[in-house]
Length: 308
Image (cartoon, rainbow, N blue to C red; front, side, top):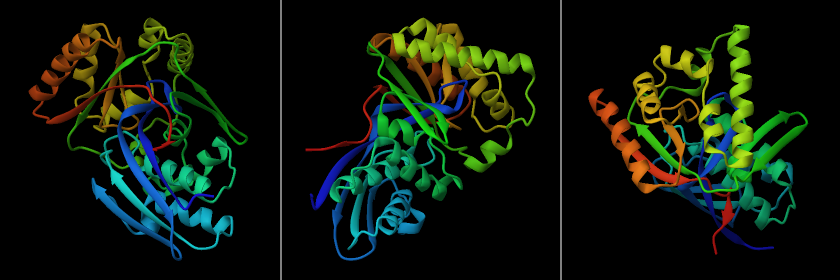
């Protein structure tokens, strides 16, 4: 039983088009680094990097730690140091990374022997702090890595697929305009035309098979959504989404919102030249809209892992 552990916690992207609350991917960057050690009583948190609450009950990782210490009757407490490399409110699973990292770390240092599915459940409870409800579309890839599907929550069924080829990923993060998860869900339609539902089922199925085969053409076709993204774009939740989508179509690639945004992503060939061309076009759209942005050129990666 170790007294401390240092882990790498990946950024994640949820939905990928039609996979609302089901699909997610883990990214190699950006990421958080979290150190957890047994110390004293209760939970202490230190934060560096991007600013997040250090009060345990208001921090997704702190909340997970409190729940696990109580539920398992663990003696003593923990000190958590968070080097926050994933910008909060970016749409890249910042809160999920912290929650997943702490769940993973506590399982290791207290030798609880929990399965990855159990870790997803505990990490999802941490999302209550940021989203008001436990949800799994970000914490699942944060724990399992690669491409994940949350097929059901009760009983929990999570499937993880590592595509058989490398895929290049460009993430664009427009600054400002982040809305709450609650608001992003409130604008969703309560009734959906059958035609749109059928199209979304087709897209989600195509994307899942495309990931399993590493088929970029199928992934491109599958990264479309006729229900959630249009509703959020109409409500102004996704900044400049329509012109970004149109620019992507002209480039022959598909673009999807990362969760509720503001980040968007493109999955394409791992070609630096092509990704830079896409970056130039999409960056031009945001500049025309007067929107500053940051970006990441990355790829799919593993879930939370110990750093030696």
